[in-house]
Image (tube, rainbow, N blue to C red; front, side):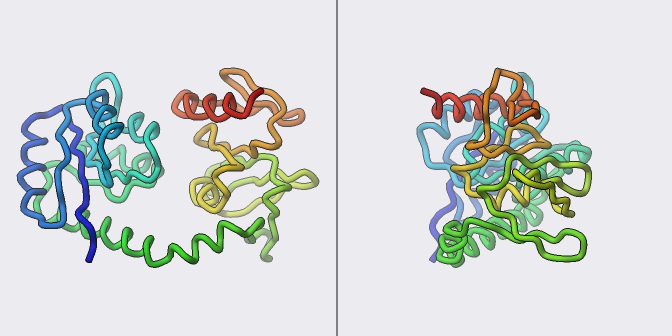
Length: 240
């Protein structure tokens, strides 16, 4: 039996929050932990409560939903709620479970909850396989019509260029059709760090850094504002 899903609502519109909460209390497997009008309130909630899923408005004052989503633990899942369709691409790039356009119907909300539930069950059932995969020290990627072995220890950094990525190794560069988000998910999180929407770096290959850039060999890699806090915390933790 699936445990109760602990949900948080974050939306600066009171009516929107009330509609969502009225819908969610009708679903037996859902518990609404809190309903917040801004990201600062939401930060306090997730720091003191277990939250599995956040219904998050994108267009909010001070801290937008997108900025908030980038700053929280990746294990906490997001369903974006907004009246603006143009944010959908960036929302899904942040690995959102779903993207609900206002006005939201109960049927559409239930579909999103079911999607989260299906993914949650799949994650649990594949836990053993994931543990085995994490122990691997390489992956294969398709490049020039063949599968190329990429040893994690040889990766310097990865760059996203439109619909493909470049993997810069110590002795060569491999180009493959893949998104940087998908490739990041296959890397050991304790060894690699996303520093920009377009860059992932190997922590062991970082030679120096400032608040704005990372140096790996002769390459200077930018640190974007949305990733800066997490990046600097990780790099400073590794410093003497």
